[in-house]
Amino acid sequence: MLITGGCYCGKIRYKLTGEIQSSLQCHCRECQYITGGAPNTIIVVPASDFSFTEGAPKEFKRDDLENPVTRLFCQNCGTGIGTKTPNRPGSIVLKVGTLDKPDIYEPTLAIFTIDKQTFHHIPDNIKAFKRRP
Image (tube, rainbow, N blue to C red):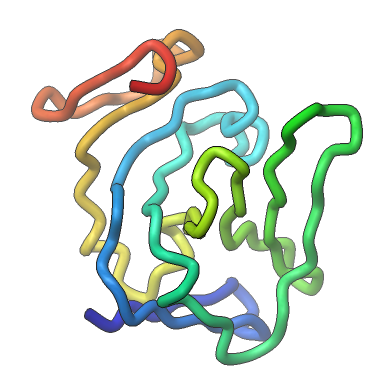
């Protein structure tokens, strides 16, 4: 499978040649900050099958957390591309909005629903977990 994507301004482009490992919504409070209030719609992909084809993202990691994620974003337009997380070594978490064809996204689960806001929607056909399953 070939999946491509990039940032809003086009300075960062990427490709994935492997399969999607997971497709989910994250409702945690941290993701709400990053998205501007919505759940984070993301896919998890193997890092070994992922590469940037144009540009390189800026990285941000909070220094006040014991095990922070590394956030990848375009320093030109600010688009959040995804994250590297210590909870999923060997994987990249990509934001669905950066996919060239976001219609391939079909969530299979929702996590951290303990932080879910009343205006968030979880489809009836997916499993939901208060934290991580």
